[in-house]
Image 1 (cartoon, rainbow, N blue to C red):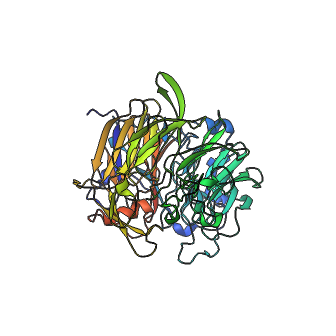
Image 2: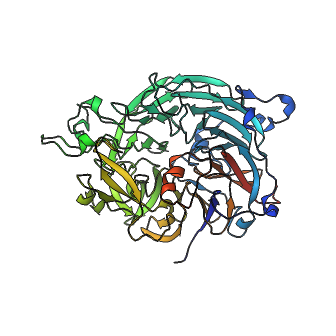
Image 3: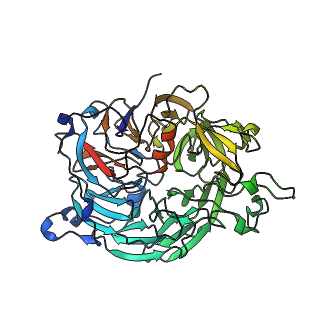
Length: 586
């Protein structure tokens, strides 16, 4: 089948592929020993010149970012993960060379850098934020959060964050001790510090913030009794404006969907990724995750008006960012008994549907089924199943209600369930090209045996996840599918033996960048560690750059090594940001 775009792969150290010395070009490597208190470097270092020209980020800029900037987690409020830059294209991409690199603190670095006016803001594992010259990699200023001891025995002191936010003259930074900081973008100094919650037990910050209507909105993760929540703070002062609980409360709308459990017996609803925002509708979209405490929900109790759907897990919720009011919700998968989350990016797109262009929210869960619902109302529109699951046997074309295969429901014998709980797709985000209407989906082909165990197991229904190959599998685990959302047809599919480990990045140059533990297509390069993050593209002074963060330790990097035994992850310690560009362009 003819391909309408080209796939490029960042390649981890696990492969035999390499780049010759002639191709590599100059590389700048940062030193981790430079971390210290907040503030710029001494003036005699001659580095802060780009900071002098740093402009305030306005609402208009966030709604329509400059082509060369990357101001939001997926570049734009609608979470498309698409770059309009096209200097690097199909004719010259083979000439890409490393421009510079910068060492990061060891650990599972999944951060998305932000780029504004030639300055890169990089937030690393361990709560260390740096401003770098996006052309040279030179350090401009740095801030390091001093973290208190973690109150959860055995848990890491720091949590993995996927993004920060920028607005006005400040950066909005979530911390591992459950604070939100506003830092001056030119100096790294604290403007305000808001404690989101004092008792950190059972809660974390992993997804990052989104800014809308003078608020900074942040979701929390964890399995705390009563569930997680989304909090909104004033950008100016840090004062809390509202809080939305992601699990329906008893006596409130949706409260009857928890099998009559009291509030303290309900848990889950984690918010793993930043919300998407539609300024026209003034709605922000989030996707709460399921619960691990699946046992009490396994069988519906016999009580009128009570269900075990467990709202608002595995749902899209649309909130008013000024008030926190729930405007609508759509539950993609009631009563998730497999940990097959629908907790990832919500893309807001315009698409012809039956001859009429509609604004839709499109999102896919770990089963790699994608649902499209009306952005204003939450009305179901269509679904696209990528063909890697055996849990859902049918989808109602009017409501989107999913019929569950009874052979996959946990019980007293081992059940074959596809995909594995790591997901056919997971937090490594998709990318959508609005010009071609093609969605690029990084996938992993896998299954699991849900094995009955004594005690809790992986889920409280008393089952353990045992990862395994798909039946009759051919040894290729990684996959990138290009699907036209208008026609619902897969335009092309690229498969390889190594699992996918990064988000997709499509560009106007007709290219798609994605990372795996190995791979090859049009251009590739051997990196020093696992690329398990979100590639971005930006430009400064007319030159386009491609950047990706590497760093072992995240779930996507570690889940699949037991499945693909020929791949051996490197030891922690190689976390780096790599930046590539074409030679000879200045």
